[in-house]
Picture 1 (cartoon, protein in one colour):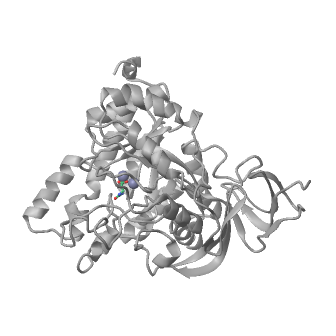
Picture 2 (tube, protein in one colour; picture 1 turned 180 degrees about the vertical axis):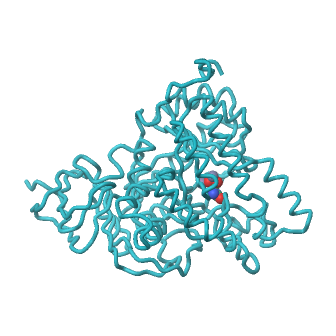
Picture 3 (cartoon, protein in one colour; picture 1 turned 135 degrees about the vertical axis):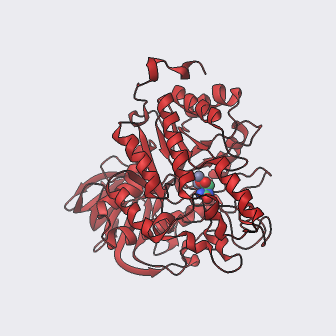
Length: 480
Ligand code: URP
Ligand code: ZN
Ligand code: ZN
């Protein structure tokens, strides 16, 4: 019997810390050996290529359920194909709660849908209604099942939780041993400015960014961190858009708090200016928080280099540009408030971050791997993912660092009918993606079947344990 099912031969293996020329031996879907030279009957030639850990995207919206009983247009089949084409092998997506309802029924539906995935997956549980039933019974139950992170929106109708609801979720997470991710923007301030903008006749997509300037993100981030400190509950601030906000996280980190910051591809390449396009075109670039300015991109790279921001996700969102279920769900002349937020980006994430980051000299390739694979896997407890080591899942990407590609939506293999990155030229592209040892994508062709992905139940892990530092030593989370 051969020692290995497959050998990835002759590549330059890159982890979050090291770069070394080596062969990788794969057995039963796992990395069984990393050595100078391995032999066996089946080989995959990686000569001249980097071999990276498969990308880990811990913030993306795929086939997310909607309140009307339908789901986002990006299906598990199309979304996971897009992941493979872009070099991503694990995702964490969102199970939803609808106000006035519980979390268990939508979760069961969502789990059933996810069985079509071709990449490995786990979920964050969105909590929009912090009822006693959800807080005291259902959250402990789903955490036991391995859904070890919750998502709270401090803005958006109808998802928004007020401070009391947020505190209750933090306390529930602390009791259950879960992590909390937070969308930080000030609900009332955005509504106030939105009403004023609409009253002034400022209705087009361009005013989306005017409705939510960075100060509303900064305020909510400060508050989210302060309340998390009060409960002594670790959090990750989602989609940090600018330095001003990242500095709030930096201050908290310097004080020893367990607060992490994620950002997304769009905050390095898009700007608010993109929303100022003729007709309805600006809607393609509407997401929240809004992308800021070109000068901000450089400041975001600073925050990455300082280590304040340590995860880059896609925040891929399922709204097509054409048709009646996407951006135009309220009509092509809908004002910015009534146009859905979010931009797609599952497969563009690694190429854009490599090109903007490594090729342009903002970060080195190991830092790129940490941001896009190793750190998200560690932070969200995805054991055996995000690195290349013996015993890890053989989730690998063969990466051509010199290949130049001009991004078009056809290359994204997604159901969403546009990409905000259309026409951008990148250097660096995935030429093969392996999921647990299976070559699932080669030269842009998906070679996998729906159902090849598996659910990643997340066990307790130390990184997200509370610090044990409480005001007056009193643990309110034991009581409320
Ligand atoms: O605009 C965005 N980011 N849409 C997706 C939902 C969210 O806020 O994460
Ligand atoms: Zn969000
Ligand atoms: Zn999101």
